[in-house]
Length: 250
Image (cartoon, rainbow, N blue to C red; front, side, top):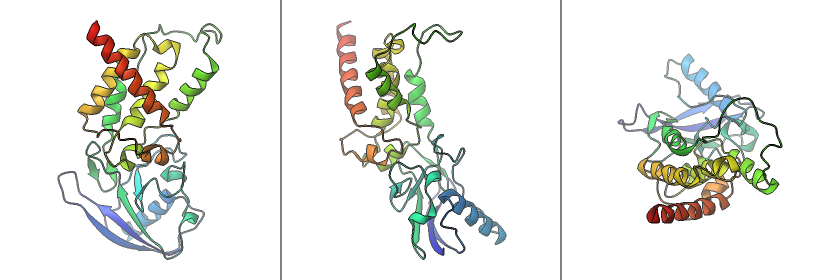
């Protein structure tokens, strides 16, 4: 395959960015998108040009590190797929591909296609813990959990924190991420003790980080590589309202 790559280059968050065009030939349709980026960087290095910086780690769709906006779509045009799982056979020979970083005020550009997503870490740290005693693993039947709750908690725990939900939202809202992280613990018996405190703290951390408000556009769930449902946002809103009322009358 022969491709024209329109790649965002930026020296840092305080610098002006720009698109630069690169011609790349001999791309295998069986290669992943990140392997194609590796091929581009090898070509740039051979030409004495600074390689394009981009995030990657496991390349197995697990870590959530790969954060590229491809032709206007977070992680590219394929549904339920991370960038590292996207293959070049999804593109046409001779196509021009536009590659940008995730765009959000709370995700400042570090360099080129790399963004700082530490705001997600602060949200998780604000309430992502339980005070259950640690130690050896308890017996599996010691604390019964309803299967419906267990299934919902597992679905929420599937969130890999990639940030596609934020990048695809018109308001750059982090409600899907926050609701998944809060919902994971709030649905389980072990998480009930801190449920109200957790919800208030995580939503507060989300607002302080500069994320926008949720308007239920649904783009977040559509872009999510793990298909996290909008139902978790509805649950977070209910839990947050209850927690505020309890705090007001306490």
